[in-house]
Image 1 (cartoon, one colour):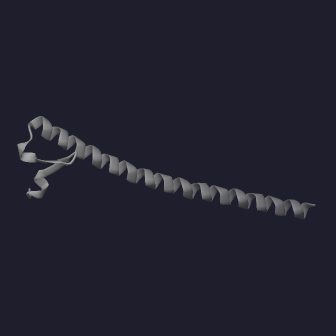
Image 2 (cartoon, helix red, strand yellow):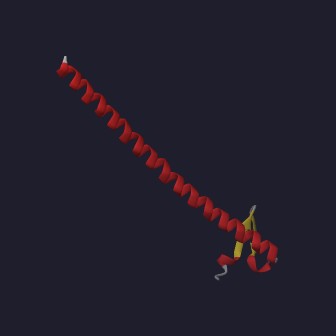
Image 3 (tube, rainbow, N blue to C red):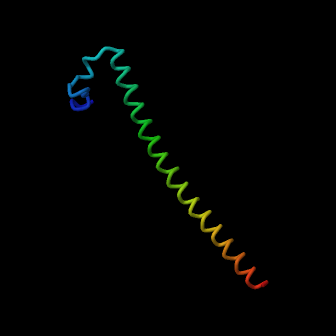
Amino acid sequence: MTEENKIINIDGKEYNKDDLSNEQTYCVNQLTDLQNKSNNLRFQLDQVSASQTVFLEKLKTSLGNQETTKAMEDSKAG
């Protein structure tokens, strides 16, 4: 581990990981894991939101095409 990786910053104060207790190290590891999970969930949410938009637009297009087709059929029948 490089010297840079051994330093953590909490509320503007720097701490050397080697100086932390086991409990403090555990908390740091938990926070790191939670931040990674949060980033991953945000990434997944972006994908889901984009997909919802695509499928909504596809549905709107399909419904619009259906209405156009029905209107054309109705005008031919009349």
